[in-house]
Length: 60
Image (cartoon, rainbow, N blue to C red; front, side, top):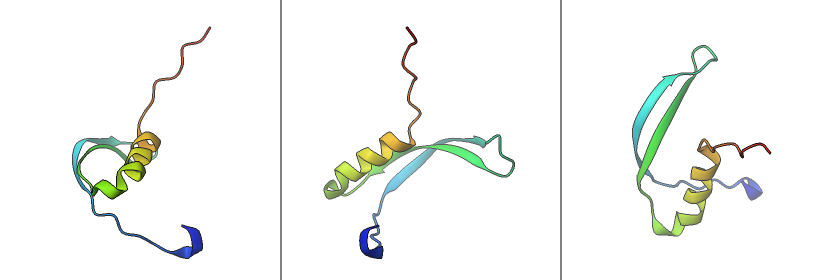
């Protein structure tokens, strides 16, 4: 973060699935965010976008 500052964001989430990744001893998991402070809405949306699997665009 800018200036080396850290900020804690308290989120509640539920793990929906978990399975071992192709890399040994690593796991992939899917979570559903249940509650986040409204002032963090944009950050939560950005994190959801970053960590979500998005379909690839169709080829021409």
